[in-house]
Length: 97
Image (cartoon, rainbow, N blue to C red; front, side, top):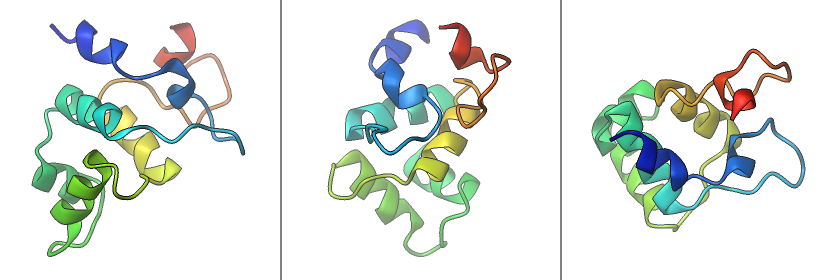
């Protein structure tokens, strides 16, 4: 049942950073969190966000109130098993998709 969530994340969001990298939508952030098995608070903790405001920040990403930074998104993708998208080589699982 993991596969349907992968389909909700645009492939261009799983690329190395560039100036025209598209910021993931809130639904894409939520899909990556589901793949990782994270709640808002567990995601905040795993991503190194501040204890008091971290879960709120995650809710803002999911609610499309603020954009998730690329470095944080890249870590979330790694936790979700989507690969190390920041790598420029073909060893990342996302490069094979």
